[in-house]
Length: 551
Image (tube, rainbow, N blue to C red; front, side):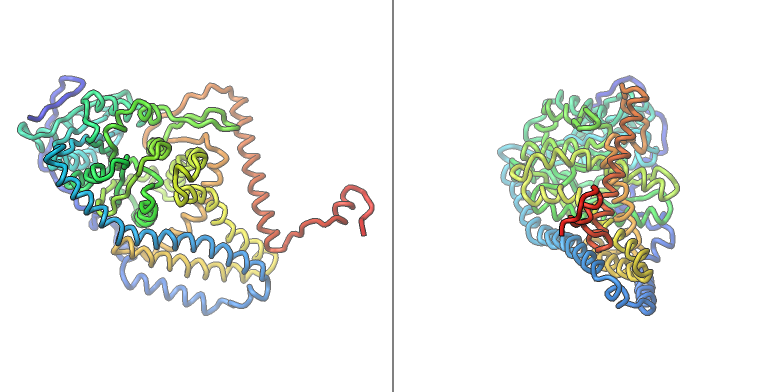
């Protein structure tokens, strides 16, 4: 029998039933995307891009760079072997995982569910949905999908709605009655907090789930308030926990539904296409690099572990300059690190797709991309050092190296551009034209590889790939020296800082100083590789200190 537990006695307000129950299509809604997005995925668009490459190649003196500076060719060649070799490794591993390894895992999971159902019974699932300042249409679509999935859960389900506003509570209760009815085996639990942040919302909900006394074999799906799950995702995911007791969590593929201009549609679709390949590659090691907050599924015993709850609720790192740095954002990285430290497996399920509703924080692309990158990369880098400190014995060698590469790639991505700028300014301006041709060709090859991930790819992807590499690396290097910069893109939650204004200014000055020194060292190394700077010999050092040169 269905039941509801909530924090008050308010009844639901009236709402259009047909609007609340309207189904949304999977993936991007073609009607909402501009003609430019649709055209960019056509053969004509790709032919136009190829024509652009051929046009630039016809006026580019290919031999000018080789005759002007062989050091640049050596540097760019080394970077190309390093970066594209690493990318090819991910690509190959991704295909091995999706084509060979995962089908066997899927079969084992389904067999485990069938064989254990009579003995252990079906697993009960908790669907935890967190909502804050999300428009009503999106909230209705998210909870409609959650209730539909809960109804199809083999062992029954409890939907836990972690909300802030009364309007959301009324909407959720109305949807529950409309979709689940009185005879459903779906329970509804509502928790409300004062809007103090997602970490608090998760911690309250985790404790609410603990009070339900789930069995150790039950599972909890943590779903963001803008993520629409497929109706069969429970039955397609829970078997992996029963097939392998060392599996602590899993996450799935994602596609985007974007509210915004064409450039946002293309940028987000590129991001998720690349994510599919990288997650599949790391899935081969059974250690994904993030348990995305959009939708990840955990063992109930982990969610109910007080140490895990504390990690998510009040995570922090101790930094040599910033002192104790409490985490505001990045709850998904906190949960990921806890499982990584405790040697749990974290799986990627490539045949389950969750649709995420993307609302850019600004209608202008560059400010929106900047805000999102600061949050994404800040979460990554604040967790990077402690993950590396675990060592390859806990993380696995490939996973450890991938985490280490997060630090290296932000500099190697900029090294090629720095080389071309130095050669173009001090050697030959043709270096810039050759570099443009190089970028157009190599990024288009990367785009074509994404057909392995998605059925359609945009001819504009190469430009966004380059933007993500260069501008993303600039943001990463900035955040690396300003790890205290934390800000949500939707909520105004901030951390209380007990430092005085003078102390904050000193801290910001030290961050800027270390960042500038790092950039100077980086440019110096690039210039040394190019031969534009020479390593001082003993005679030069002697002259600098007023000594007689040594013959």
